Length: 319
Length: 280
Image 1 (spheres, each protein chain N blue to C red):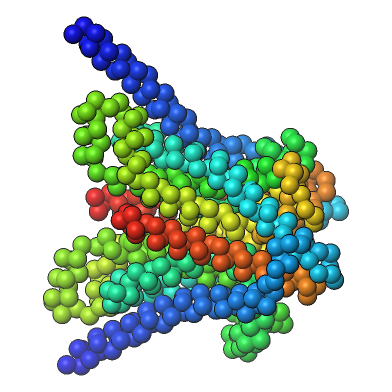
Image 2 (image 1 turned 120 degrees about the vertical axis):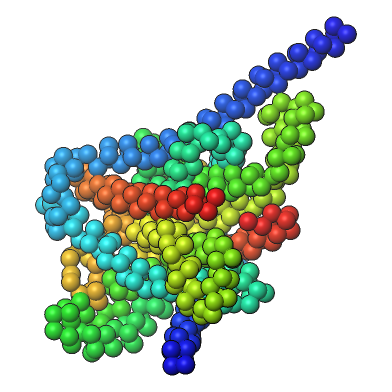
């Protein structure tokens, strides 16, 4: 009797020790995730320090990029990053909305799964593939058909036409923005689809019962209900577009000039890093590139954090 | 009546636009895959797998790059899988309504979408600079860091799907918590967790940006993990941007190989998930 109880106690004690050890192990690896983020921040600041100290905040508005005189500024890459992402969002958001609307409201049930899978496969194709495709297929097509048309129509408008000035090169900001649009499309569409599906069917059915058309149900019931989530999805896509590297590097032309025309070559933060980092000679050159990386990290961090907070808020409302 | 007609017309327009948008999205999937097949199939040959990357103007293959990609992906998986699974276990089993858990979950979701080139810079700073040279180790670590958030996320989701009654039944039999997790919870979620690992492998097999600053590239055959190592994505980048036709053909072949591998992994993972009844 005593032996049995002793054995039970011993087993409980060993269970307790095993529990503590296992719990500790999982906590360790969970904090490793935090340490990665902390490490990223510290290493970026440390690496960028020489450039930050030399150029200060002026780094952000300095349009120069001259490795010979070691005068570096982030204006052109920041400008390119923002403009390409803006173009991507202008094209990507409406299309993603259409896709999500089709999948949740219009398509027959048997088509839902395969269609969702295909859109997700679009997201699985790595960015280098979009890059090589963009360079050899998309850029020539845009140069041949889209850019001349833009120059002849929108380019003729006084003032506004400056956006479409210059010769059609194929390689440039517009092509980069377009390829980004295709790349972020599946991310935004699948978040929107998931968000639309959180709308209680009862609400939608009531509206349909009152005689509302699909359009009216979506604009007056689904969208107001899912607004926060839709914004979250859009921000998630924006976060992707801002940091996307390889596809952009292939087609943007890599020129450190701020150019009003979206038909001309430009550069983005990530493209500048991918192109120049391993070839950067001199400490100041490398530090300036790392400083670019730090700026990119801060921008994407806040965009992604905002996206996450929006989606969390929706989850809380739904739960 | 007029109002009704107008509403119906408006609805047709929106439905039509929505259809067009879906067609637009699918068109590009077909377009990209079609171009890949058209350009890649012609460049496929057995020598791809038996010869190393050539200097411009002569014949060669991608053997060293394929080998490098496989090795670095394997090492990254070995590092990333246990890390991700244990961190995910913490979130699912120990961190309900727990500040640390919420914070880790938040940061993990940000890392999930963070630009991979930043991870490359990070590994460059912590491994390449101290070691003094580029190496396959650094490349593997960079890939592992990209993998971890994916696995954390799927592990947590999959463990949350396991019914609590199962855990309670095991606990009622006197099993300590760690034993419940390892022998009961893991066992019933194992297919889902493997799906997550497969998706993570698919995610890293095309990653280029983080390898540029870590593993770099190597024109020759090398199995030394302490040296720069060739890998498919960086070779594709370099060869596609070059003016040489035979290099470009090799880039297409490599692109086709990578895409085929990733699509197989993705579809395999999906099949696996639905087979185990744990579709998300």
